[in-house]
Length: 128
Image (cartoon, rainbow, N blue to C red; front, side, top):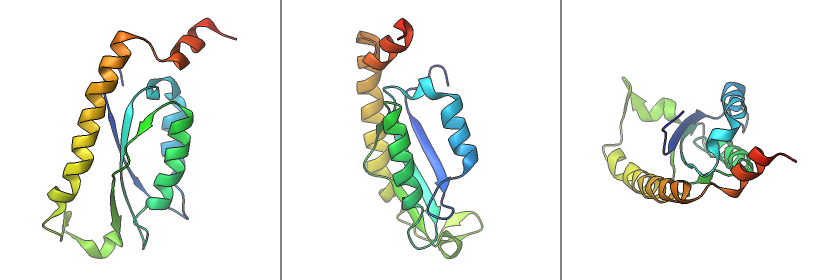
């Protein structure tokens, strides 16, 4: 994760939550999320994985990440995809706002991190 300026998290939704493997990865690398932009692509049933994303937004906010408002959700993905491709030809247009915002935040937060460490990072280094 070293040298990373942004994250795009792709997650399914299981019982209104996200997989434990994703939680384990987030927790294992908890310091790397600070002052990093995170965008979401989700898939699931009727809600398209949005319940999972809501939980992830809370977790990542606690780790001082910056979550991107616009995301991509694929409701009923099992009927909206065929042979690994979405049936909706406008998918690229739907993804553009998410990717544009993620790129903007990546640049802005990289500049901010280079100028001065995030206050949470300073606290971790100095200890209690």
